[in-house]
Length: 321
Image 1 (tube, one colour):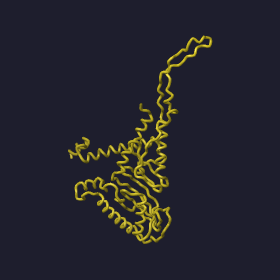
Image 2: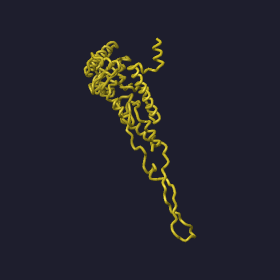
Image 3: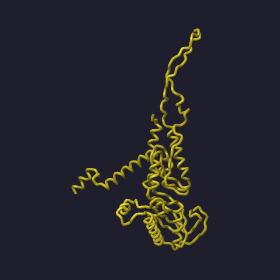
Image 4: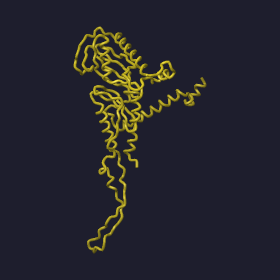
């Protein structure tokens, strides 16, 4: 029999994303959400206890002589099925984590519940890119490339201009584009390569070195600057190292003050649930929204491949033109 808790759990199966704040380990984020979901699932209304026929002894009156035992049948609840006896209906649910963020990074963290873990694994193995914003500061170098590391060098930065920074970024992006083509293992002169590039599916086969597919400066206020990055197979430590290497290319030093993921595949900051919305109802709403968006994207891709699948009114308009 399907209970209210099981029906609620089925509504939770799928993918969603949350906003992981800086200074919090991803495991703590995952465990907090898992605990909250378990609590809400086990607080769902309980089905009435099943009943069974029991034969009960009926005591006679005190004035009557004991001539024998009087028996009667009665319907009674099965107390062995009571939740105080059997324990919570859900002891554990599996909440999977996609591309992880280290403790000093923030941003979009994709999670999955139930059968959504298979879709999460497919997303993890796909060629989707991720977007980050990197906060940097010229003039300092640390042992781990982060702002909290031990300072190992200080340098001047007055000679750095945005034009010089943009040239270094263009050089790095060009080198990474060559690496992307090399790891793609596909003939760049083929029609398949062209179609994959148009759809944004061009990428390395399996695991490869980290690759930057996009890199630009969106804020330049020396000594501070902000970079926008699109990448594949990256780690947050690698991104901090990129900021360090940019400083070296500019004959100075630079340290990364912050790493924030703004997109992971189809999930963006607008989709991410903040800490106050890590509730079962908000998670269910986010999962329904993801399924709805996924269906719309599949329909639009099918229409691009076969124009005959477009709605009738669109075909009529096209024929009139």
